[in-house]
Length: 88
Image (cartoon, rainbow, N blue to C red):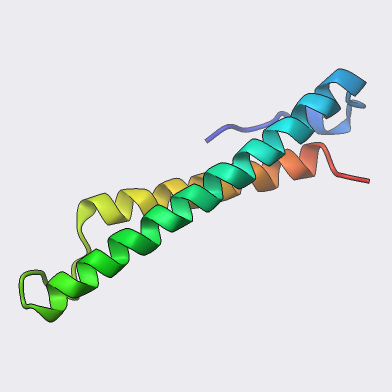
């Protein structure tokens, strides 16, 4: 995961960096929305397979777990970005 040095958090941001961060926040929100839609679709598909007895309800497929991790990572990046470049 990307970490920001303590000095970077204290140092004032340049206007260009702030503008770029706001664009990136919008992109991250869009990415998170798309990932959540993929997760919902994958979970629905998996539940149907569980209902038919094809898959084990206690063991989600690895692809679904990877999608969930991607959502969590994107949300974490968004939080870090907002912490570094808060909106007014």
